[in-house]
Image (cartoon, rainbow, N blue to C red; front, side, top):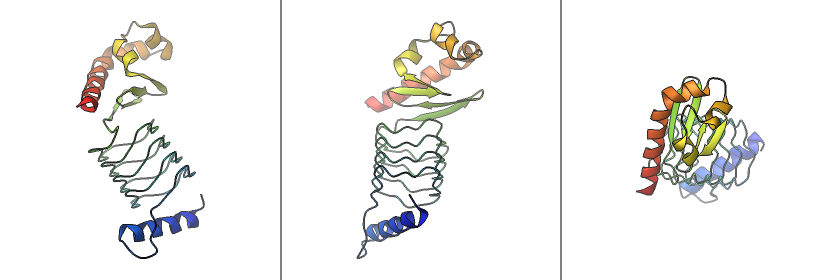
Length: 181
């Protein structure tokens, strides 16, 4: 999407949020917003379903109540973004930087981000991504440092899992319990 087109949509969205005449809710469904600079943008209640936000700069963006279902947020910078009550169901958050992000009440937002020994970890209610490996939580919870699955991932994976696996498993159980409550 061209920058001037996006700017026009964001301006009308701000008018809509302020209940001004001519305002329209931002509908960016399936929009190609790869690498877009949306730092501090007010996208509250915007429709971003299926939007491709790979590597987008969303630092400090207000995404409260935004619909991000099935959005691709892979490698997006979401540091200090407000995702309160956002719908993140089926969103791809692999490698997304969620440091200091406000995920309170986010739907499917029981998310834990950790970084251990060079691999970034994103734990969600059903799946966990560690580095480039994404698997169902069931597999991670039953894995040990001796598991063939773990050993096949990387030359150092077994040793790494032996050290960090217990903490990751505890975090997975925590995310699952928050999702069920």
